Length: 138
Image (cartoon, rainbow, N blue to C red; front, side, top):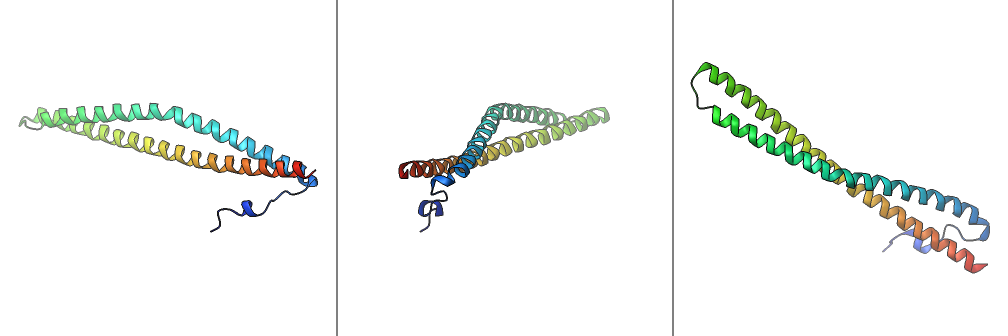
């Protein structure tokens, strides 16, 4: 039923409120600018993180394949090599997992920044509406 209290009541109503309105408007405008900058940076970083995650996954799969090919031996020296390869495969799998987590975190960050930016832009529009209303009353 209630979409927002700002739709029903106007915070700034008279010409004497203009200074406060302008101050808040400037603050929100700065927030929009900051959020836009952060969002752009996060979006630009995402492809690099995705590429690193894909490379880590390939390295993990390669190391796992090498490790699996080595396990069928009975020689002690070969067993040691197999263990080293298995350890490497495990390490690569962990690196891949961490890379995928970084990508998910980056995507969450982008979604959060996008949501915050939308809210600030809506607030900016509401302040602009108040500004217009005050001007039209004069």
